[in-house]
Length: 119
Figure 1 (cartoon, rainbow, N blue to C red):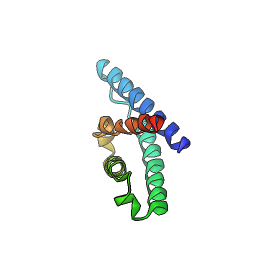
Figure 2 (cartoon, rainbow, N blue to C red):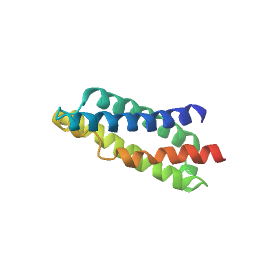
Figure 3 (cartoon, rainbow, N blue to C red):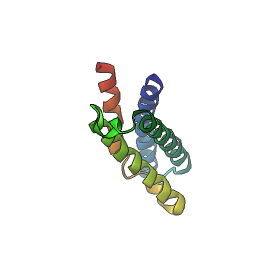
Figure 4 (cartoon, helix red, strand yellow):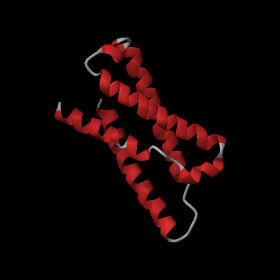
């Protein structure tokens, strides 16, 4: 749980950094920096996918009906969006310039970190 909290916070920082870097390049008329941002997206997507699979393996059906089912459903949606972004960008390297359509939505993971800190 502590490791996941740190990774969620790191992902929030990464999203902010990527947004700043992309907007700086756009203001200068330069092409969007895609490789380093794409690599970060892949690393976070893999980590969150593995974390979701481990939680599902541990909780089994409680994953869907337990007290945390709403958070689990949000995590499934966010991880799915992340994986779709990564798969689309692998299939079409030119789409890496628009590396993540759901980056702001995935920032919602940060709200989960805040909730964990409250509990």
